[in-house]
Length: 202
Picture 1: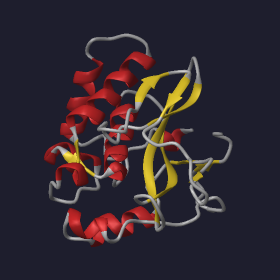
Picture 2: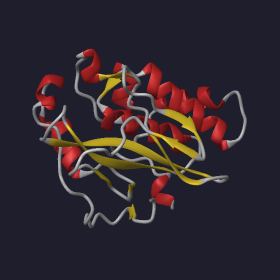
Picture 3: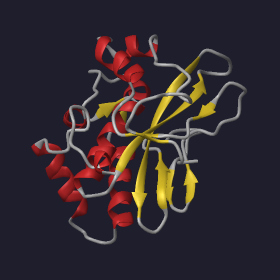
Picture 4: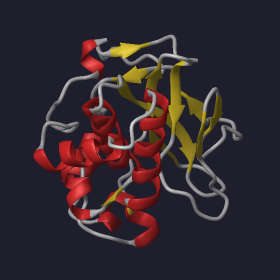
């Protein structure tokens, strides 16, 4: 479980700005679920989804997302994981495979899982709400941004301690949010062999 508390290259919660934000969100106290809720609302509501707002630059590290106030779903999940870990809450990354628009192609969607003592691993999606998207923090009920409704879409039953390579390939090689949109990551992660993975989430 220690890997889900680690400060890493992309989930860099020991960065001074990230740590300060995490401490500010924890200042009101409460149980771990209360702190997790405040972290979730901060990332969901205060960090803009890059494509919704057409806002550059492309961010990846948690500290970059916080500094620029923007990120794709993947990058926002990196920041949420960092804020949770900084507060001693085990947190990882989860992925779905969703259709783009009303028909293929597909792309990966990034979200989180946090370990809450009262509920176990709980998935939460801080992508950012908009018309047709209503994600909430309401354990034990799961209310994500997107439901699996179309053949070919998938919920991957794992928790990754680090961003998936396909996600990093998109965020680190594309110069603008517009370019990322034309190179969104995709893939079947159901047989992923990444070591830092729990396969019993769902």
